[in-house]
Image (cartoon, rainbow, N blue to C red; front, side):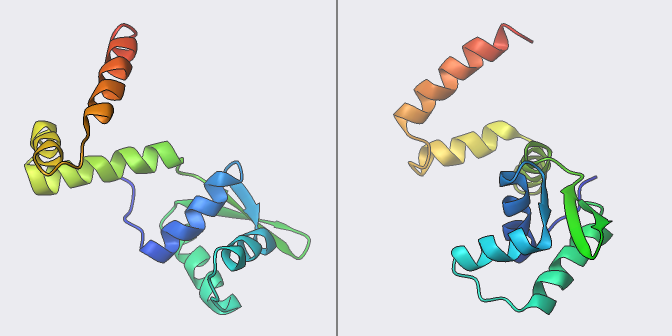
Length: 126
């Protein structure tokens, strides 16, 4: 089972995933600054350490630098979070989630057409 992560931890994970699943600490800090975060070094190190403890990242020393590699892919994390949402809020019924999205106009007609095309294409491969 994939552990839950905080919003701050997820920000860091997104940087690592966008960088091919691996990043040096310096790159992570640079990307955080670009996105407007002003987190201190200790804060980022703490967040990275938590992700390592949760077995979502692993770390590798390269000289004096730390390289962080995602153990959990973005797709696997998204799938686990979607399943958790469906299980918690809809008792495992994905149709309940879709119904809510449609009823609240969160799921548009274009989304429906895109999903229909995806389903037709992927359905043939399953």
